[in-house]
Every structure is written in structure tokens, then in C-alpha cells.
Length: 227
Image 1: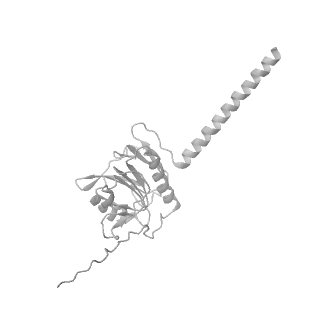
Image 2: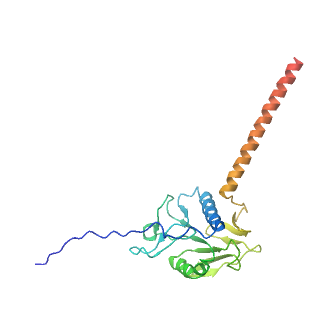
Image 3: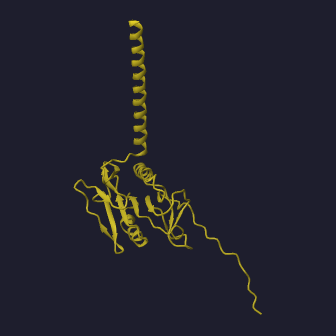
């Protein structure tokens, strides 16, 4: 007689950190966080667009070693919501766009292994940005997936690149990556810029209200003198 035993299925752990730093320099951290936050704000009204960055993306079920953490990525066709990791076999949607901010330690991988992996995963657009303008020439590069391979996106006359998937134009200004609405040419604000704009508008509103009150008081005074 053959005796069989039911053993509990081994639970596979998918770590939430790869132990690597978020970015190499303060400038890289700033650009990563600004780009992620600006895109999140731009797509805030789209319930099926998920924007994240520096989050582990696992692409092979059962093998936690098969993972990558894009600096910033955008997925369409999945619900918003906070995730601890992004499992491709659960979500069933690869990112449509990935941004990598190239540094001294990542420049070879960004243009080699990562590029090949993103193509294999079906990432439609891949953008490389060298905010220090030290490692890439030109420092802003874009690729679009065609028949399983990336084709270089031709730059506009000002060096900017157009993302058809996002509807945005990307432009490197100094050490900052600017995101611009392609149709309207509206420049998207970073969180700090949006906060400053809100503060300025609040101050202007307060000044206008104060002026109205002053004019009311002046009008009341004049009426009192005439009476």
C-alpha cells in the first residue's frame, strides 16, 4: 500500500526591499520623487492608471530573484491603490512607461540589461535621464517598443521627447526633468511649485479681500461725512 501525505505548500516570500539605496545623489532622489509625484497628480482623475517608483516589480511567479525596481513607472488598466510590491502575474499589466535616472553606478545596466528586460516585459516606452549630464549623450533619451525591440525616439528641435503613452513632452532643463502637456504646452508643476503657487494665490486672495474691506470702510466714511 502506498502512503501519501499532504504537505503544506511552501509559502514564497517576495521581499519589499532589495537593500539598495533609493538613488545615488540628492539630485537623483529629487528627480525621482518629483517625477513620480507630478505624474501621480497628472493622473489623479484616472481610476485605472497607477503610478509608482522605487517599488519592487516581480515578473516571474515563484522566483523572488526575478525582480526589478524602476525609478518611476506608469501602468494603465489597473486600479489605483497602494501596493507593497508589484507582481506582474497578479496585475496582468506591465508598465506602459518606465523612467530611469542614470547615475555612475547604473549607467551600464540602464542601457543594457534593464533595457533588454523592459523590452521583454512589454514596456511600451523607456526613458533614460541623466540629470547630472555626465553619463549619457544626449542626457535625455527615449525608446519605443516595436516588434519586441526598442527604437530610439527622435528628439524635438529643443531636445525634448514626446511620450505618446502619457501625452506628455519631456524636457531636461538644467538638472531637472520637466513634464509638459503635449497638446496644450502646459508645464506640470512639481509638488514644491504647486505649493508655492497655492501660497501665492492665497496671499493674492487675502490682499484682494483686504482691499475690498478697505474700500467699503472708505465708502462708509465718505457717506458719513456727507450725511
